[in-house]
Length: 366
Image 1 (cartoon, one colour):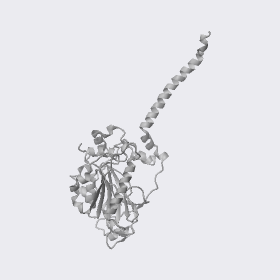
Image 2 (spheres, rainbow, N blue to C red; image 1 turned 120 degrees about the vertical axis):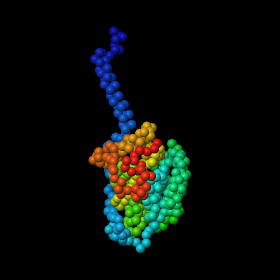
Image 3 (tube, helix red, strand yellow; image 1 turned 180 degrees about the horizontal axis):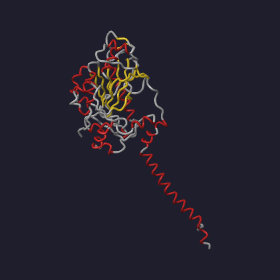
Image 4 (cartoon, rainbow, N blue to C red; image 1 turned 90 degrees about the vertical axis):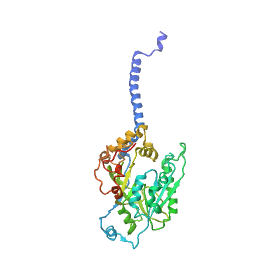
């Protein structure tokens, strides 16, 4: 009798067994949920973004007028501006990584209208990966613009994983270095400075307005038509980070919002528009959002080729939108366009050299 006094009654044992049976699936469900949230946190966050984030204040879009064979005086007047007795100088400043084809299209397209092309190149990426000096090594390709190019190289070392130098901080350091190069470029108060990434190309019509019109806003963003992988995949008109400034002593190079004014339909932004598969893989690992490469398989050449021909997302991400309507509208592949109208004229004149950027040219060499 004394030995049996330590055994729980049968009813208590049954309750313990039932509780244990319920505990096992609870722990399994909890574990799976934690793993799912950890692995798919970014997707869940983007899916619910309309609930936790608010859209930025809308821009005031300045209407953009242009027609062939229209005088600059009339074009300036249509915008509510006067015409200058002589044109301003225009400086075009970019940070360069490895976008050689897009940069050549940019420089060829804008050469007649830009007075100085200011370009800064580093020997490592924003994520600390050593890289070749692509522009410097291909300088002969840009000999046509040599009289207008102001170039410098920024030496940086590998990022210390323990340091707080995130890719975004490194990128900000690049932009500060570009300010120093601008000072050496000879830019002066009253000149126009275009601040943009290499793949954000203002149209010649836009640059002509900046060059000739008196009364333009001291700062305005440039609304660019967004393309992905090539001009076969138009996304939207929401590229706004490129900007134009009437230069003052306080002007600093930035790639963020600086005003509420934006000139409508001012050019093109062709993102991840590369000739070879290896260039896609390099940028995926090199730019500030390299953390989006969640799996090594993302960098597979076969996968990259399939993604860019189908207009899919290289990082398997949901669209970054602020409303569920816009989110659902942009889910899935980007619709193809068969139009090659209203693109950079240099691109069309040299279509055989840049077939990969035009409709039907999605196949890239590995």
